[in-house]
Length: 115
Length: 114
Image (cartoon, rainbow over all chains, first blue to last red; front, side):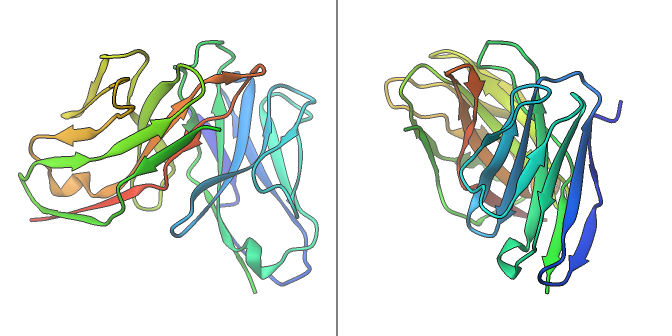
């Protein structure tokens, strides 16, 4: 059981380049999330999705776009990368249960450096 | 809004020492509470959780009790091992407008020396 898989694991970009980070989950989860993790800042929510075809902004959405065309995939795009977007990006998913005690399941992260 | 406050790290201990990592929260409703652990180079994984007041979550020798009166969910372990070295995150989750957006603390790094 793969759980949540993030692709790629590492990437180095030049300022102004674009790229897409892929998150795939095989647990049939409705909710999916993208976070960034920076030293001393904990996890900050970029965008999230409550189901196929829906997306919403999180705490730090500027400079990022997302799409959820298929239930199992959640894509995070950087249209014009900036050094401030150097970070570790985590994807997470959660089942549909309306009980608040359902945990999130996380991928192993994508380490992105922008020069 | 909701918030989670954790003690700042790093916490440095010798093997077999007693561990406490403090976590307090503010919430508008009645949230569920979680501890996640992040090992080096990996994503977060659920360590334990509690759903209602006085519930005790436990896993791998770690425990935390949901204290509504003090709005706390402190993580404890009686005897830590080198393999427990990781970053620990306290989090809460409650339903808000049909969405479940967890609130995380900033994480506490634990370093255990042999």
